Length: 115
Image (cartoon, rainbow, N blue to C red; front, side, top):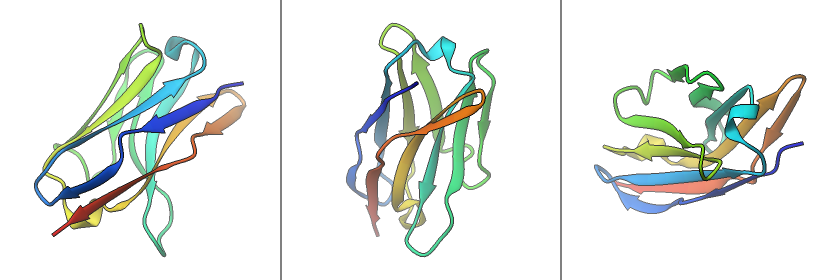
């Protein structure tokens, strides 16, 4: 079992930055894969970024070069640093944890980018 708690969403102007946090209820190194997904109104949930227990990182094409995923093992927390935000980044952002064979999701945090 993994409980996830996101924080850090809010309203920001285009070109600005935000950092999202996802606190896990167990060691991040015991989780096979963690990541961020987002869902905008009327759209499907899409991958933003992932990080595996071994540290392998991947990004969705629309955020590569602007967003950075990281984790702090001392705090069992994953982060998403979002820079150069665009209006199309507006969505609910969800934290995900995969521990085979189960998937766990946070409650989501709203990010709104005003143009």
